Structures are given as C-alpha cells and as structure tokens.
Image (cartoon, rainbow, N blue to C red; front, side, top):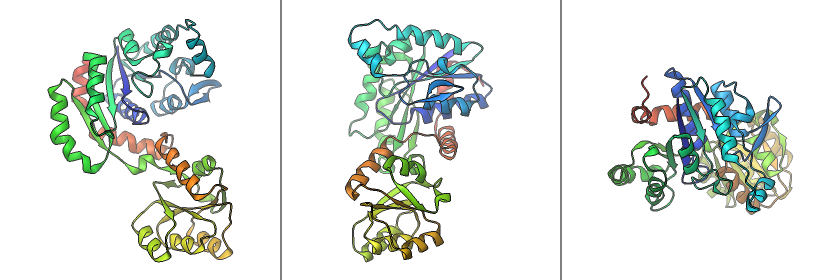
Length: 355
C-alpha cells in the first residue's frame, strides 16, 4: 500500500484539483484508492458526521464509503489552536495515523491532501514533513508560479521533504510565462533533483463562480431571471467609464459579470448589449423598468447589493482568489486537465505502480 501526500508552497493553488485528477486516473487504471484531508478548515456534514468540505467532494467524486471521521479526522477550531498554544499534548498526529490505518485497509494507495502550506499544521504536530515521515509517504508539491523567483520555494521543499518528492506540479500558470518556465525553470529544477509532473495553464473556468454563490457572498438580491443563477461567471468588469468606452470594453470580455452603480442606466444597457452573465448593481439602487425588461428578454440576472462599487470589487477579488471546486462542471474540467497535462509515467515509476 502506498500513500501519496499532496502539499503546496502556497494557499489555493490547486491541491484538491490535483488530488481529484490523480485519484480518478488511478481508479481508471484499476487501483483501489482512499482519500484523506489532513486539516479540515471548511466543515460540512456527510451522513450526519462533520467532515471537511473538500473531503466531502472527494468522497462523492471517488465513490468512497469510508467513515467521514476517518477521511477528515481533524477539523481546526479556535479551541484546538488555543490548547496547542497552552502546551497541551493533543496527539493529533496519532489520531490522524490511526484514521489512516483504517482508510488504508484493502487499498492500493491513499491520497492525503495536506494543509495550505507544507509548514502549516506544525503548531498542532501536523506539518507535512512530520506526517510524510510517519506514513512513509511520497509527495507531490504544487506551486502557482506567481512569485518572481518561485523556484526558491520549490528548492526549499526539496531541502525539507528530500527524496520523498515524487514530482512537482506547476498550476495556474499564466500563458506569457509558459515559454520561460519550460526553457529555463524546468531544466534548472531537474538539475537540482526535482522532476516536474506537469504544467497546467490558468483556466478561468476553474476560477468561475455561480451567480447564486456570488449573491450569497455579497449579500445581494437577485431581482430577475433567478432560473439563471446556476450559470458560471468567469470574469468581472467594472462599469465606471463613458458609454462608448464601456461598449468597446464589454465586447472584448465573455462570460462576465458587470459591476456598476445602480444609477448608471447607460452602463447597464451597454452591458446587456454584450455577452454578459449577470449585472451587479451597487449602492442598493434598483434599475428602471426598461433595464429589467431588457434583462429578462436576454435572460441576464440582475443582482442588487448594498455596498459601494469599490467594496464589491474588493470582495469579488477575495471570493475569486479563494474559490473552491464544488461544481460538477468545474470538477469534470479539472479532472480532464490533470489527466491531459500530468506525466503519470513519472509518478507511477516513483510510486512503484504498474498499470
């Protein structure tokens, strides 16, 4: 039985996405897999038990029947953190290893999704290094290449995790960086003992959010076309210019939501004449009947929010930077992306797996 630990150098850079893609590939190749989330941060319920939301999604995708309390044995709370600071011996690593033993029964491989950073969890005795050593696990390290010299973090991961690293995944890579990364960075990493399993370009679809989720996060009211609130928004535009400039700008951007003041009827009309998924009107100001009629004709939901435009823009940026994959359309896309872009031969060789 093998354990594959997925960690990263940054928060929200694709651990769950990668885990889902690798897990589905392993299942397709005939391996029986298990899944665990080391530190649960976003609790939900499954079968009446508390479980991390990412772990719940993984269970559904993989069709797992293991007990929720073993799949996600540790949910972070303020009480647990306070106890750790007070010097209490929580023995959380022992709890995790005990659950791992149960999950591993009759499995070929267990995928463990680590915390946001490979140092995160150290206060609780649950650093990536510690758990990888305890489980004799192999590791995948993910980075999003946003920092100017992101190889620093990857080299540090090599110093910390050593030969347990099966390979790297560079995710959410901006297209203009791709050639430089392939020509300069990947050979450098290879020369320093780090193999790259794959490079995945940034996909706006995977960063998208449903109109319904947007409304809930922004405290907005959808006043028309509620049947379209399951549609996904990939991009956002702010309507604060003149009408001529707005039309030209909006026509260049697809699958977008337009954020503008509730008193800017001219901008609202311009947005509705282009490929717009949703209108977000700020300042708690409602549109006139002409705007509503046009939106209903074109099936574009209108959302009214209390906050001003700047506050809404800032909140949207926060939402998009921490977006989780919980929509089947995005999950299917993520699984296909991992299947297409990762070199599973390198991974299987390191793990000693044969198809």
